[in-house]
Every structure is written in structure tokens, then in C-alpha cells.
Image 1 (tube, helix red, strand yellow):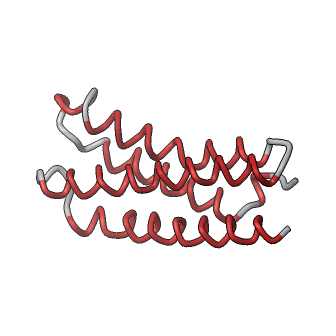
Image 2: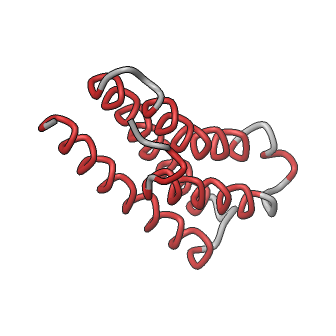
Length: 118
């Protein structure tokens, strides 16, 4: 397979995770075990599942983990939208992250599609 560190989708997912950690630093203390924890776990799940999929033995298994990563992307989007609705995060802080997540979901679909062909 690949070295997961070289995959653009993994690199972008790591950037999203880093940005989520940074943006949640400003959340209220009472959200530490609520949205902060959920946002961070969803974000970490994306590059983690991509990396785990790369380490599997077949393209079929890799696609399965890409599917899990994609689910985590949509979970993260929901939590970002909720954080914005609750006014825990400002539009100018959340919009770049949302755009990055949407971009990697498209990359994920393309990667899954390419794996079906091989």
C-alpha cells in the first residue's frame, strides 16, 4: 500500500484535527466533556481511520476504513454547525474548517472510487 503520511487526504485531515484542537481551546469549561470532547474525537477519527485503512491487507478493507473516516467527517460537520448555532464559535473561525472538511469528503469519495477500479 502507501505510506499514509504521504497521502494528501491524511495530511489535510491532520490539519483539520489541529485546527479543531485550536478552535476548541476557547470553548467554555463546561463543554470540556461535551462538545469539545466530541469535536476532538471526531476530528482525530478522520486521519486515524485513513491511516488504519492504509495498514490493512486489501483495498476492500481500506475502503471500509475510508467509509468510517467519511462518517466521522459528517459527524464533525454536525458538531461544528451546532457549535456555531450555540455561539460557541464564530463564523470566521468555523468556516475554514467546514470548507476543509467538505474538501476531504470529496477527496475521500474519489479515493474510494479509484480503489474500486484496482
